[in-house]
Length: 448
Image (cartoon, rainbow, N blue to C red; front, side, top):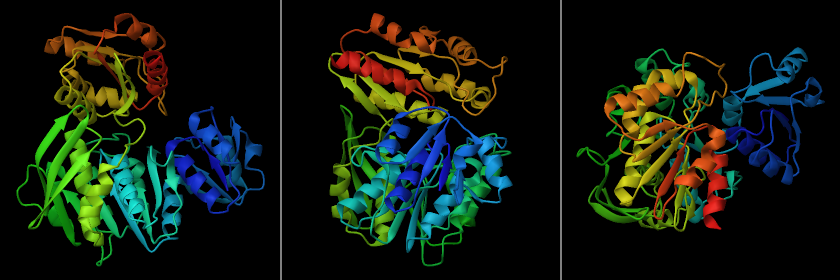
């Protein structure tokens, strides 16, 4: 099997899992990365740079969504009439190796919720197979090959990838308009989630958060067994109350029917309460002992790049993958709810199309930060657009009355942060691009 774009967070997990399953795996990527190095350490041959000869005598070629149609390796594989699968198709094939699939979907929280479910099942010795879109700290990997019957997987809505899955249990955490290059509008996105939910068999279950108005709006069109959860909505099967936050930890009571369970998380934020409720909904559906599940959640150590604390001495450095306005606002508010100190945000916008569509929402989401530094846009799979820049967000924040927002080039971030940092300051780096590299550097500096 040859992976084109093997260094991607989703691709690398599949490659590792299949290597552990005994398949001969090779891959290529445009650049080196920690994911690539981890795969090389596992004995997978990875070539940096794309070349038609890299596919060699492969029998199956798997390509990342980020790979363009004119990629030389992809074109060579197609010309040879090899089996060629997208990443999403390959995940659906792996799912067939297990008796049941738990698929976690939603615009936000997929990675953490998938990790929570996987961690609970591992702690209870159910030994699941897991593929997740982030490195789970307890696993030091984004995949795990288990001998149990359950496959736990993150179901991504990008390119409607989640429709390749036919899960036994489907989770819908939330729905917000996103991936504007893939969906015509919010209704198109909702239709995809409805189709995903209704792919569940009659003996399965859909776990849905009714606090998300867009999820609540599609419930009547889901014709499969449903278990609901939430914080605000009173008419749910699983409800959280008495939420307490302090110093990066959150606790709450989970009410399930006439039972009440205490949950203590070592990860912060109201959004993580929702993630934990989703995980408990899965456990309730599977007939798992909820008290044991809550105990397992208390040991959940989080996921890299999800409120990932890199330094916490005199200055705190936190790195987060947030790249949608809702996510950005959630993380900013979480810092403000947990710590009474100066919050400096370094935000790297991700994609020109997303910045153009949501710049006003990003501006509003960042308003509660004391100091905001915005870098140039990370283009990723998109072409450079001169008419769209970070200034859209900056100008909107200034219009809304923020007094301390500025543009700082990415290569000057470390120098800038070092020059302005004071005791007890928090610096929060956010974005789905390469901002994490600078967070790593700052973490090392402030830990010395």
